[in-house]
Amino acid sequence: MIATHSPILLAYPGARIYQFDDSGIHEVAYEETEHYAITRDFLNHHQRRLEQLLEEDE
Image 1 (cartoon, rainbow, N blue to C red):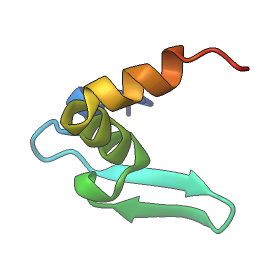
Image 2: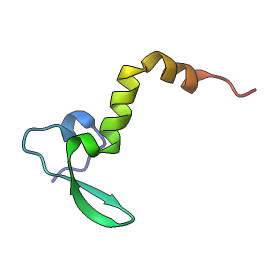
Image 3: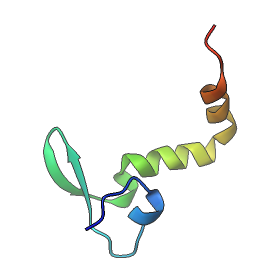
């Protein structure tokens, strides 16, 4: 058993991914994980996300 936030480790062939949340513990597909969605969004829109992360509060 491995606990990770890494979307690369989550993609390991044959991995069974369990999500822990307010409704309990349940198995989810790789593409349904928040870590996958965040990584995909960053890779698809990296310039915009970096600008958001680095902008200074006015």
